[in-house]
Image (cartoon, rainbow, N blue to C red; front, side, top):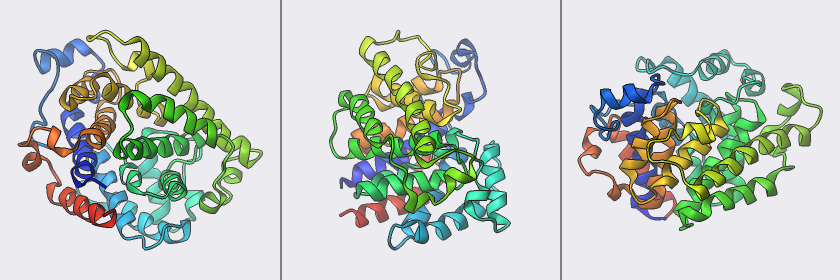
Length: 333
């Protein structure tokens, strides 16, 4: 696997997070453009990231510490990293309530199924899943992506969106052309629609109150398919340069919309990563998470070398980003 592209996924996520963080809670596009003239932010400022990057690095550390990928081996490293993040003095970057609540339950020693917030499909499930995109085995990639989401977000759409996010990264790393990505993800979602990964999820479907395994997981895939169809239409028809991508695929506070709108921002200018991040920043939605995902997709497609060279030394957690990039490159050599 290309080292530059592995770096691109991790650094690109952090770059998007830092660039769009100042606009996360500003819904007025005009105000964003006035704050960052002429048309929104195009720099990572001081490189300060949010909980998105912190949790992505937590997942990365957990994955690197997991010797063989099964639910049994994956739980302890993820639980440990999530609890460490919960108590980190730097966990002051507007963390999501679902992640905080679930991690408190994990910290208290509850089973992960009971700790998980069963009705939540917030974007915290997939704004951190990027390292799962480096897993070559398709079943392990899907299982791990869903499992890391399920520890905090128990809604089936959170699981499906996390798997699709990891799948999109894997496809781009593997050379899939950006224009082919929507159709490939739609096909993947349709093929997985009735697949409940009991070896990873256990009785989560019962804990969350569904009537059966298939009714549980198909709900998630159906909601993802609906937003992927909207993404495909937006990409095919095009959207105005000044339009808000959120108007076409959602604001990104929930997992399936974060996937679709992050992808849309990338697919509008797949050869220009800074413009993709800018489009995510100039939105009425969860801009830092949208840009975080757009940066991951751009990095998987173009590699770290496509981003401004100076950003690498400006970005927060640069040492950890470099360490994990090297470790994942060595694992996938």
